[in-house]
Length: 335
Image (cartoon, rainbow, N blue to C red; front, side):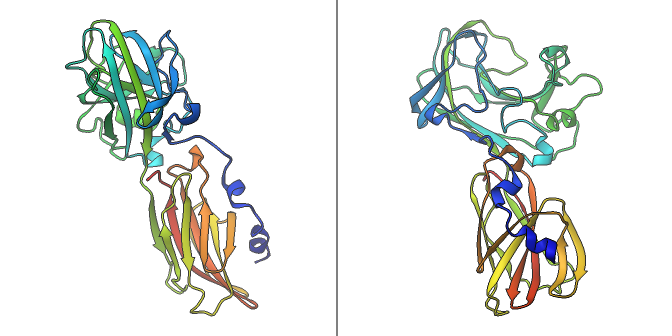
């Protein structure tokens, strides 16, 4: 009990993580935390207006067979183990202002690359999905959503392809989807099917509103069922948002409530004494929020939290008595 009470003073945000990067890069106010770039000699321009809406990333002179927008290595929330984080998709707004010979027949594609942490492409493995036609010159912004079946453990999910430096349409021997989806080092958006070639031309292109999609989720647990079940989620835990819950203090006539948070996982330990009931979250606790029945917990915008699961349990205070309630396991999502 003493260790539990000492934890109450922990500042919640600091106990969890430090500040971090966005999962929805909109390039507002000159922001480009993920170092997204078209990777050409002509510098990208962070425009302050004309996006969809507001700021956007612009390159007016991409001299290439096709523009390729890439994330900065290790500098963005868009990289990592997609399966562990529960990633279900990415989306982007793109536009083509001009192309010397036109863009008819070019297909907008998503490519996920495992670089093995080296700068050379020879050891890279990648998986890609070919989408619909690229934005046509002068047609304005076009929205693209790519579903990513990160939980799929097949060698190659339906609709996807794999490749490497020696073969653009097949994974190298001994490598498959599972190797790439659990080690995404770079995200790329191609104005072309990655297995095709095209004539070099001059492109004027832009991007806006890159979003990594991780669904929020929660599950209520109550072990053997002996604890009061008065702990309820009222708004989901979202990256950079506020997670809200309520604890029933009226029924037991309690004067306060707490929500304890851990990251290690669930447990089941009966406790007796002043602190009593079934402990359902595995210590150590990273934070405790004390309130009067209504709890609002800020979720920092930090990459480490996108897709992470928090194991939480409530309790109520009566004079000389702390009664444990049910637990809620919540996965922090981006939507």
